Amino acid sequence: MKYAPQKFGSREAGRWLARAGLRPTRQRSALASLLVEGGNRHLTAEALFAEAQPAGADVSLATVYNALRAFTDAGLLREVNIEAGRVYYDTRVDDHPHFYYEDDGSIADAPAGSVRIAALPDVPEGCEVASVDVVIRLRRR
Amino acid sequence: MKYAPQKFGSREAGRWLARAGLRPTRQRSALASLLVEGGNRHLTAEALFAEAQPAGADVSLATVYNALRAFTDAGLLREVNIEAGRVYYDTRVDDHPHFYYEDDGSIADAPAGSVRIAALPDVPEGCEVASVDVVIRLRRR
DNA sequence: CTATGTGCAAATCTTTTGCAGGCTA
DNA sequence: TAGCCTGCAAAAGATTTGCACATAG
Image (tube, rainbow over all chains, first blue to last red; front, side, top):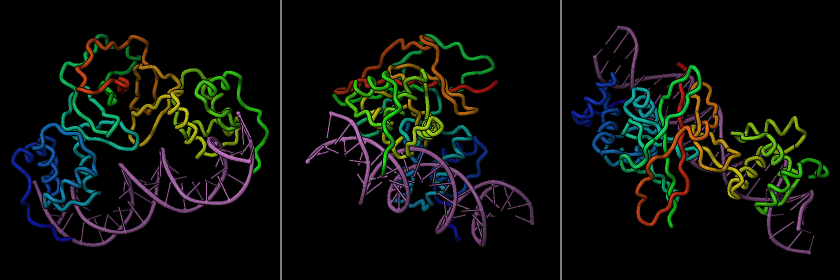
């Protein structure tokens, strides 16, 4: 297939990709721009795909999935597993708690310091903590 | 279809179902027994289905899924979302932290009190906390 | 008897993969 | 040029659903 010339992707997005040693292809650059410039975000592959179209990015859904996985493996994104059968990607990669609104299935960062781990567990022999995920599920009252 | 006479399900399992107002059908009783008598467990629908067969329970996979959802809706079980595309059911329904072994994808309860929430968040207006899920992801060192 | 449950298979939905060809370095 | 990427469509895996029949209360 014929690809259009490179025309998407901010400098910031370019650095973001370079930092992880990923080739700045047209598709990745466009997706990276959407991810980096949107501030802290939590989105699914479908959602990013839907955003890419109107932005003129012209990426296939499979490429969105592949790119998100590549970004995650490179440490640029973080997977958030909250809902069964649906993966969210978080542009913040540090440990931080999330609010999950059960009503509409949306996700938000909980205010910094809103949850503090007072005591860390006795980790089983031969293991180390990779991350600590905290999800506060909220219900409309 | 012809069903075999009721012959599975302990008294304990019967009470467990009655407590939630669920009809103690043969299939549900058998599944409830497996769940209640196994102590604290974290299993998937597939896993429970696999256990039911040798136990002579003769349930279909669809029924296992339906029953697990019914149990969860009734508050007898708790869904645990840790891995994308795979739901675990926990026989403990109170808030408690989990260890997740990234190597083999297994789940275990973290020792009681191993994690203590020091400060609860400022919950958004009009919302209340349904539950707080804590997952400590472990990596083999 | 009547509302619930159940089995089976087909349908959904999300995510992954195989392949042929395009593109970055 | 060499190997990484992409698009497309098909595959895969988990869970749900439609329908006819069974069964608990």
